[in-house]
Length: 155
Image (tube, rainbow, N blue to C red; front, side, top):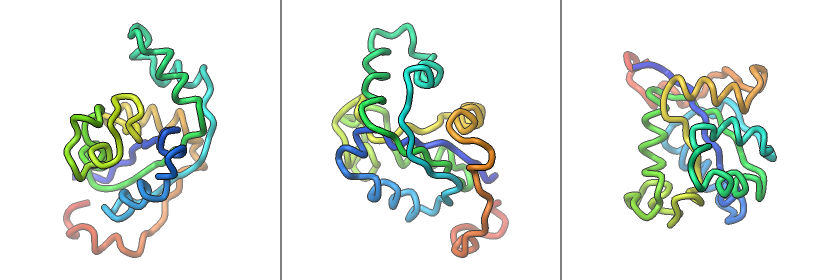
């Protein structure tokens, strides 16, 4: 097991529905360390890069347009196996199919307006963190509760 950093974007729908504190609180209560956090207005250019893997899909422009309706909150979260753990906490992309208790299962009914974006692999997390954060915007710090989150041989 290793400490990992991952990107989470709190989408415009999260801001519009006044859920930022609640969703951030879920990640903190789970035990993730926030290493970076900022609000930003995404551009068509940045979204074209971020969603390049969807560029041939008929909904590509709709997704980009939705992501520009309000700012997003970009988070760099850290924890043991953070990428998989964040994705499990988020639930499946389509909120209608997400289990109760997951973020999407609790807070959304949509495939698109689904509260969060979360990196899906270590390679993607590295690329996405570099896309949304400058190196000096990601902080290393000692969280006082850290020794109580994991056994001493887990990280």
